[in-house]
Image (cartoon, rainbow, N blue to C red; front, side, top):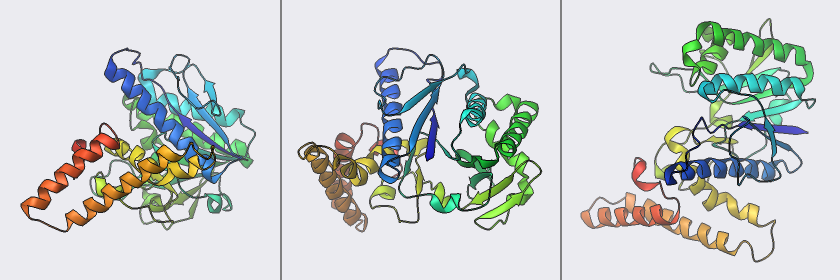
Length: 316
């Protein structure tokens, strides 16, 4: 059985203002959408949410297994790494997929687990300004050789604490993973390259297939993603696009498993969204003032009907 694991902490924010409540609700929605997308591909999988002892999880799907640990919200990424290592120690399953909550799984990952590896990562685009070649938002563990897996992540944790202690909240885990693998080994790699390290065999994957970042613009979710894109990562400013894509192209598949009438609102929403997208794409080809105004009106309609924080916060 495959196990899909995500991590969420309120990050010390327990306020009751309307904006804080909405932010918390948005994250819970993302967690539910992410695991629902898992269900559509792997109906028999185990779904686990790792969190601290205090985070409010009201609204989380009851089918999701919640594992609470003593973690420090002020050291978010360091806490996540420690929690992931602890989970690997405790887990007897052999195929583990660690995901950020702002991701959707659109296709199976069976091809990965047919390869001989211990730990698998994707890397981001290599550009001069790239801070990290490895993205820690998704990685795969073949837990058959647990001692080697734990040896690798122990080395990552040591590197994190020793060299990146000032990055406990962000980036530090990625720097430490990259250092443990060897930055020079990542440049120029070919997809499905296996790097044999003293601690573990590390598999490098094509980010376009298993950790795809859509552009931060509404047109990037106007049509369904290509079949080769198995995992979509709505990180950073892309988060507003996740619910749009879910409502437009995936929610109907989920609703089909409910009662015959339960999917009617979902069907109407999906059809409405797709109509707006068709209009937007048609208007994009024009440049006159009238069509420019129509484009703005469509964006206003989208911001009202798809998500409260979409149109004006994205590059359009």
